[in-house]
Length: 117
Length: 278
Image (cartoon, rainbow over all chains, first blue to last red; front, side, top):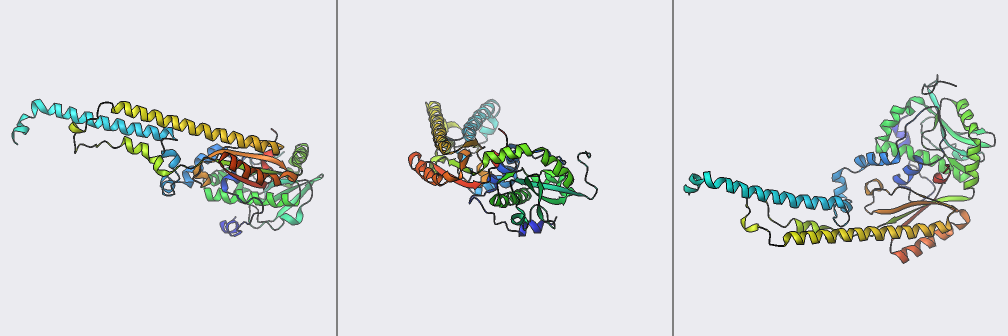
């Protein structure tokens, strides 16, 4: 089969107005009456497929440009984002601690360096 | 029975789209189907009629499909092509759709397999006669972006980096407690919003079930998959008698007004979700 034939067919599908891909996929992959075929084709579970699709449909950048990641980055709604906030706080505290420690290290041995100024 | 998995001698296979309760020859004959160069046609068995197409077996081998499933555009083309044939057939007569990619080595094999399932097809046709499927999606209310960013910004206000070492930037006493309070508030708000959204979804579902003959919950779509930034809190589908389908628009508007939810109604669909045994 050539790719052009299906693309150029430009489907004007009668039926529901909102025939978005997700709506169609969850029906043609997951539903319908299942009978055994001769040729075994492993149609992935729709859940697996949507995970895989997500990787293709929206690279992180595309998603961010489109502003569709608000749900994931809003700490009020996402525990993931809340965790990020906590990690930020932890990192800051660690940095501060390191700064203190390096200062403390410098005190006994660093007098020469201090004396030059 | 032929060996499973082997190609038929001429390298062709028979793809079955759907089974109809009556002949549908003219309706589907002009459709492109899932293969170029061969017509979509009907294959009568008993009182039922299958809608089929001869395809190249190599195009529908498992490896070809795994590649297709990994390519969104390919997958979309095949899914839409399949759906197109099913929808056109269903407009002409009562139709039981088959899932994407049900294939037989040849016509004879297809007829024999389909005939063996006559009972199931009849039962599905009886169950869905004069009914259509209607999808209902409920979306959580969108939140203003500044509200969304606020808690992160507060947490990140302390200066950092070795360029400006500690000392005077030491947190004021009670900063940790304030932080925990803030965290608790954020969590409480999140839980409250989730509970409200779920309650709203249950209300909508219950109301649609009163009009429907049967109902199914589908998995909510991720914003990425649907290409829609809103968050779905309900993705359900209902089998509704055609004589009652006029009530759905009104019900949707009424529920939108009473719950404040954004509700999307889609349909009529060929009853994909209601032909399988439960």
